[in-house]
Image (cartoon, rainbow, N blue to C red; front, top):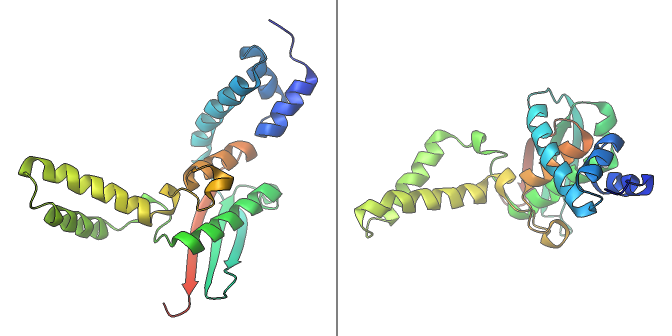
Length: 199
């Protein structure tokens, strides 16, 4: 096994935002393969992000987006654990990108937990009625499939970011988890408000 150079560790750190020792261990384990080391860090960081999800996010930022035509505007609150991260350039940029996404995609809720049960039941009933011409044994699956698609349309965290070129089809939740892994803190999209002229 070849020795991992400090330059390689720095390159991996710049790419992932992970700690120096974590980068060195990942490169050692990957035998110097940079892409494999990135994968290892992403897997570990996702596990760490899940643990961080229980920690209180009481700092953060409020960012806005106003569309060029002046007819749509968004305010979004994204929280983290420390003031240091709240002022971090990547954190603020993420909040701005979420505001831009909300302006374009118009989600109704931040997470699935925010969707009222009566709304889910209403949509499920509609989808079951729409499937009434299908065989009875497949109606529930059709309704559940349509409900999952509806949740993807109305829940912010399930939506792929509208800037597909920049984010390669990743969802808002995937981007949030990546930022949490990079900052080492719990990152929470707390709330948003979308304003549109005439709405």
